[in-house]
Length: 193
Image 1 (cartoon, helix red, strand yellow):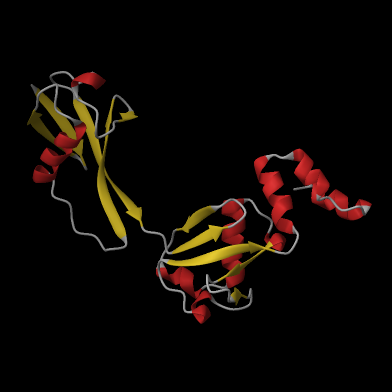
Image 2: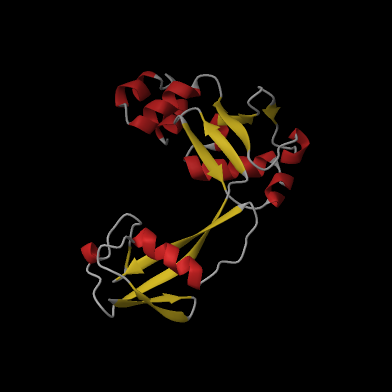
C-alpha cells in the first residue's frame, strides 16, 4: 500500500506493508531525506507522529491504524549533549545541565542557581564540589576549576541538612519533624521547605 510522509515541507510516497515497523519506515526515510551532519555535541534523530500522536519505533504500521493514503509526519529532533553533570547526593540522581560551552565561563553562583531551580533545593542548603573534594566557591568561574564539557560536579549538603532534606524529598514526616530546631524562629523557617 502507498502512504505519504511529510518532512520539512516535502511530501514523499512510500510503498509499505502493514507489518512494517516504524523503525523500518525511518530507515526508508533516511535514504530519501538525507540529514545534514551535525556537531558531535548534538545527536539528531527522526521523530514520527500519526493522527497527532508520537509513534514508537517498535510499533507496526497496521497496529496504529495506518491505511492506504495515510499521512505520517516526520521531524528531525536534535538533542544537545549536556555541558555538565551534577550528582545530587540528596536525591541520589545525576542532573544534566544543557547549554553551550559558554556555560563554563559563568560563575559558580550562577550554576548553583541553575541547580537549585532543577533540584528544588534552596541554595543555602548545599555547596558544589569536584569529585576529588575541591569545593567550588561562588565568586569563582567554573573555568577556574578546569571543568570541561561533560565534567561532573557533586552537590553536597551542609552539615545537618542531609537527613532533613531527604525526609522532605521523600515525604517522611517523622524524619523531618525529628530534625526541626527547638528554637521557634528557626523552626518556622525550616517549615517553609
